[in-house]
Image (cartoon, rainbow, N blue to C red; front, side, top):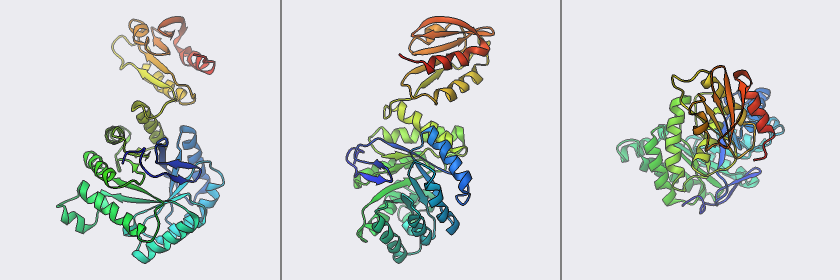
Length: 351
C-alpha cells in the first residue's frame, strides 16, 4: 500500500497514515528517570521540528517519569519497551501516547495479551518493531541468513498475534543497518499490509555515515510512496536527526517550508571563513519558517551569478562580502557583518 492507502492511526494529538503528512520522530538519549534532562532535550527537539518523541522505559521509575514528562511537552510521547511487558503497561498507565514493542521478546502470548488489553482500554496504538539484529533463529535458518523476506515474515507474525487478540491499532517498523535489505523489506511489506509504516535505517552510524545511509535508504523507500513517519538514526545529538529528516523530506518534495541553504564547496579564491559562515547561516536559517532559498558563496567573482537562483545570498571577498537579492548586488559589507545583515534581511523578509 502507498501512504495514501494506509490506515489512519492517531498518536496523541497527531495522526499518521491515510495520506497525512509524514511525521518526523526522534528518541531521547537521556535517562528517562531524569525528568529535567529529558524534558530539556525534548524541548530542544521540538524547537528543531520533532513531531513525535520516543523515550526508553526500562524501569518502574522511568514509567512514572513518563507522566511528569508528558505534562511539560507538547508532542506525543512513545514508550520504548524491551523484554518487560510490565513496563509497557506502566508506561500506558502513566500517559504514553503509543508504545513500541517487539511481541517476540516480552515473554509469551499471555503477556502480549495483557499489554494489548490495556492498550485497547485506552485506545493506545502499538508500534510492532522488528530489527534484523534480533531476527528469530528459525527465520534465519529458513531463509539461509538474515533477509528482507525474513524480516517481513517476522513482522507480520507479530502483527497477526495482536490481531488475533482483537486489536488493530498498529504501526509497523522493520529496520536493518543493511540499507538495500531495508529498502527491499519495505517494498515487500507494503504489498502485504495497509498498516502505517515507521521507516528508518537502524544503527546507521555517525553524523557522516549515518546521514549518507539514511538519506539513500529513506529516499529509495519514501520516493515509492511508502512510509508514514520517519526517524533518521544518528550516533550524536538527536537534534541532528531532525535537521536531516527535514532536509530529506524537503529534497524529495514531501514537505514544504523552511529555508533551503545552498553553499559552494570553496576553492583557492575563497578569502573568508566560508565553512564557518555556511554553518552559522544554516543554524540561523532553521529559526525562520520561510519557504525560500539562501545562498552562501565563497567569492565575489562567481558568487553573484551562482546565487541567481536563490532568493537571497551572501558572497565573500577579501575581508568583506556582498549581499545579493534575486541575483542583484544590493550592498557591500565587512566580513564580520555578513551574518547579522543576512539575519536582518530574513527578519524583515517580504519576498
